[in-house]
Image (cartoon, rainbow, N blue to C red; front, side, top):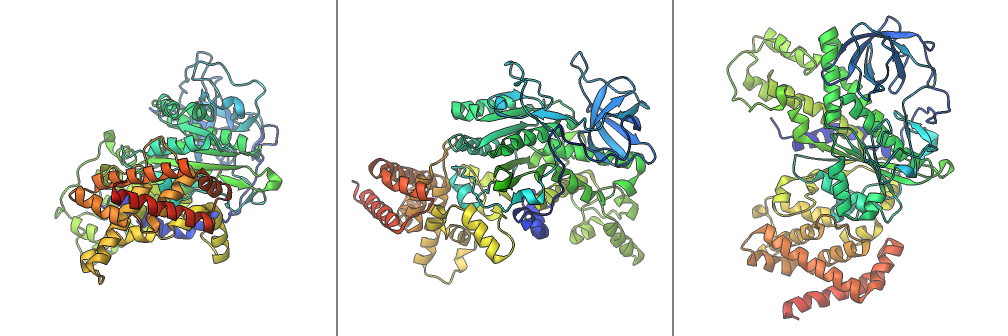
Length: 632
């Protein structure tokens, strides 16, 4: 089976048609987010019996089957009253099933609902809410506003918003035209993030997704961007430790919303939604906010569980691949809440970094959480009924049935040739993982892929330039140019406009290049210099002036000869050569900051590089490199 990063790129190509929709502001439906406003229109009066509990999942949430005609009477966040006297809320609905979560009782424990117990709609307007505002910063709460840090409750007079808030209306939001500076040169150069954007950060375990997000959060403390971190697997202590290592400002500027690792999947979904609402509280005050969703694999697990419930209760027809569009709606309810509001609506914004652990996504789709090794192709002939269930589409089954009608044996070899996963546990795992990735890629405004191979070379963050991109600005040429000119720092574009092209040139087989050996060497050395400029240690976001100084030196070709020498001294060890070149760039940046601070100040105040500033900067760079050659 293809590796998941490859699937990500294939998914990107299929989803390209959706790419610009968020950047150009798609039509939206407005429902007021305030707790005082009217609730979404109800098709049944308060107290109407919505349905009965079918079962309580081992994970701690319950499945409710709507009574006849009761579908669409309520949505996520609607509070319910059960026969037992307990309360709960709807986490998600896939009619005629509702997936509900009970609220803790007086003893703090989650009550277990009896099968066949009835659920009634609570009073109109009663939706699950969360407190928002500055009192959440520096603190850790759960989605029910219960403090998890031992520091007492949130402010009593804090405003409240619905946990499952709708996305803003079309008339309230505008195109994304302001950049969110991260201080990470690789991100600000290759995948610039716009305020109001949703950026996916994906990769296998151990590649530093959380470290990248922590560095981005650290950089916001001095920029007035409020941060909210949704800890969906009980990692609040780990995140807080990471923030503390990055300074008291990072801690004080970040609100943590945590779901324990063993919490029901419905609670984790509500935790993600609550974190977005806390960020929207800042946005509604005219501020900019950043949300980190860490990570989405538990939510994918929740979705898969709802599919299996539908399959168990109603069979393959209801739980079939037609649920693909329903999955899109599920993720949209979170990812499309980000927006840049117009000035007439306060001018605030919410931006999201969505972390995705590819390994966890694939592991949880396998029974017992372990993936089976791919089996060699066998000569077993598969019947069409082996492809029933939600993992194969009706189109796929019709295609296979046609083969059987023509007396063509459907073997593993035939399936591999057609690109259809084999009917095995491992195939289902790959199919489920791909379905989630497809939907996420089509919904987000770009993605950052972290590559273990780059990490092995000592490149941090290990952002893969070939498989990472931002899609802000897709649309008409005029709109695209306007958006990119605003989101992508003009200062960085000024000195690094050939970076991606010159990095990509080393991905081809240079043995067959039509150029001379000197030209080939220059290409390799330039790419090595760019990689060194993109490399920076953890917990060290850079100021814009330092980023520009490093990139300008490489872009002017002044590091090419030094890169060749570093590679020779390292005897071809790219990791050692990169470390040596990164040190050279660090020293140059530090020298400019110490001797000519006015250059950095001019770059940062204008967010651009004036001609004279560039001339002065390159003159300093030439002198610096000349000093390296002479040993001064």
